[in-house]
Amino acid sequence: MSELIEALAEKVDAQLAGRVRRGGALEHELAYECDAGALLEVCRTLRDAPELRFEMLMDLAGVDHLHYGRDDWQTQSATRSGFSRGRVPRAAPDADEPGRFAVVYNLLSVSHNQRLRLSVRCPDSGDPVLDSVVEVWASANWFEREAFDLFGIVFRGHPDLRRILTDYGFIGHPFRKDFPLIGNVEVHYDAEKQRVVYRPVTIVPRVLVPKVIRHDNRYDKALRDEKVPR
Image (cartoon, rainbow, N blue to C red; front, top):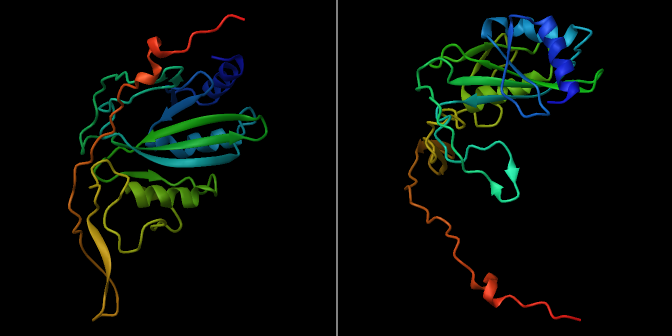
């Protein structure tokens, strides 16, 4: 880990000792976790402390950990031979266990030219609720609406929490891992009512044929052109 990252970590630990925990991250990144009850206090400190000054919320994203650790494509980085297919088994939470949903905040300090990632788990997976950080960073307004729309995470204190990407009559939250890939409802135009109406989805699931990479004899060593000496 670089000296700049370690220096920033020391400043964060000094300001937020006991309120944040160091999270997993790549060598050039710094990530922390905190409890839902301390979210607003932590965010204000990250923004206002002179040593930190994370004035900008660059992005806010919801996360669903329902199937975390069950995918064969768990990887950290690319190599010369492609992405690793190594899988690290982890205990994924059940649908109703605490910690299924989380929110990730990507912060930027313009004053110090530094970045930090903060993540918070929702205590109740059946009713995921977190405090809104709109009063800390105004840019969180639409980001929180997006997380609410796609993941169903409710942000307490948001000034106008409603769907932003899906239609007003949309049912469910499409980025949840247990949301059906074909959806729940579909829309069509009703000639009698002269308007668009919703009805149960009629799409029939089909099995896709996987792509198969076959051997190409053009690359056999025996067929390669030998170098002609000059």
